[in-house]
Image 1 (cartoon, rainbow, N blue to C red):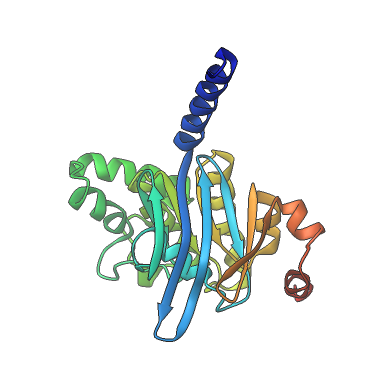
Image 2 (tube, rainbow, N blue to C red):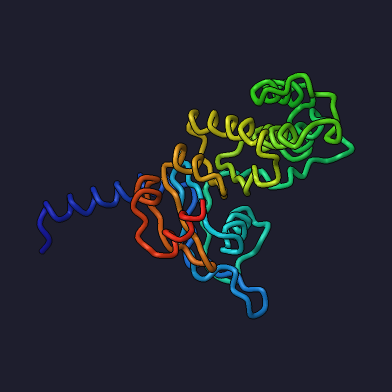
Length: 248
């Protein structure tokens, strides 16, 4: 017969598990993505807690962007499971703004069409977001009339307009000139300070080191190491990660 203490312990463990599950916004297990004979992802496990900022680093072709696209369904895994609690929004490397729409229209389009937000409310929110990213004077400008860094900040505002639970960033600064990268990173640091849950694929090592709660290193379609920024950047375990970091 089980003791009362054992039953109490099991009940507590069950309660703890429920709390942990509630706090976990994303859990991916055994994610495989194959393109013919090529395996872009080789059984990757990946999870994110609410309010956590996770950066993913690694060489080009390591599967980082593929993993990100699996989260929001842009890429369908060959096998594996994805448990997502909440709405995602994604900021792409090349902005993906509608060229025939103004900055304001780019931001309001999805909330009006998808979330059925009244136009007047969507526009008011869009103006607040443009102000937040330092572009309140660009509401009526078209993408062709603004710089790359400004386009990316509009793209961030557009993603925030969907009120996501999880923000995904796919190398958001890699298409930008070096002198304007800082303006985009500052906006992202602002989001981090407000505890927005974010997964960021990036080559900006200083950003990953300064802002992340956790950093994941990927290579050849596998997750090779993960840990705090201090663990990853100051005490890399694998020779592969040591070689990668030495190139920066």
